Amino acid sequence: MLATGAAVTTALAQVDREKIYQWINELSSPDTRENALLELSKKRESVPDLAPMLWHSCGTIAALLQEIVNIYPSINPPTLTAHQSNRVCNALALLQCVASHPETRSAFLAAHIPLFLYPFLHTVSKTRPFEYLRLTSLGVIGALVKTDEQEVINFLLTTEIIPLCLRIMESGSELSKTVATFILQKILLDDTGLAYICQTYERFSHVAMILGKMVLQLSKEPSARLLKHVVRCYLRLSDNSRAREALRQCLPDQLKDTTFAQVLKDDTTTKRWLAQLVKNLQEGQVTDPRGIPLPPQ
Image (cartoon, rainbow, N blue to C red):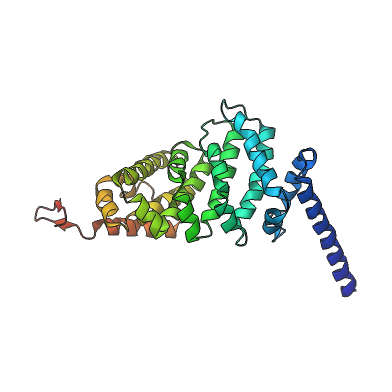
């Protein structure tokens, strides 16, 4: 009985596999592409080797890029419909799958495919189709940085991803802000990324200004998840000596007082990060007898 059950499972898996091959082939034809995008995007979690299949099959990546480029005229002026947004986001979901997979990630970067998504991150329209488009595009970049691979950070630092993320962190929806801040956090956690951001005053001050605005906003509309990423960004910046000096002057008061005590009451990790941040900024400060901090000699 068990053997029969295993045979049935194998047969079903084979049928499922045949369907995957069929849908991948259907991506090449504009007439069958929309349904194939939908079906494959549903299956991307359950087919572990979908990314290599997509990457190595003839014309598939070109078809996905065609879906992206076809949307560009709807960005400016902003006329993107929900249907267009859903369709291109299914294509983006498949590209995220390719970006996440260790076998295809390097080739994905070498082909500079993330750059095709940047026009979507430049959009500012607040309508749902645009929010969904930005969030899904950020998801592809988020999938890249999640791997903690040096080549990903090296690639991103040659692009405009930091200013794009900062703009979304300032004015996006809460979910988009969270993913954009996560991407910045991952760049900062890399030594090359931290050095890059702290290399010039302009870069550091832009990051610090946006983080400061976010803290102010979070004090009015709290979000524990978003605050966690913001605090982690500040803590990582404090690992750089020049940034640490600047943060002593510009760290928002809300992170030093009890503003977020209620939001963080059950979040021991963020509380620990916040305490470490305050400690980092206090260390190395020289105080004169009247209690006034003096600049280090």
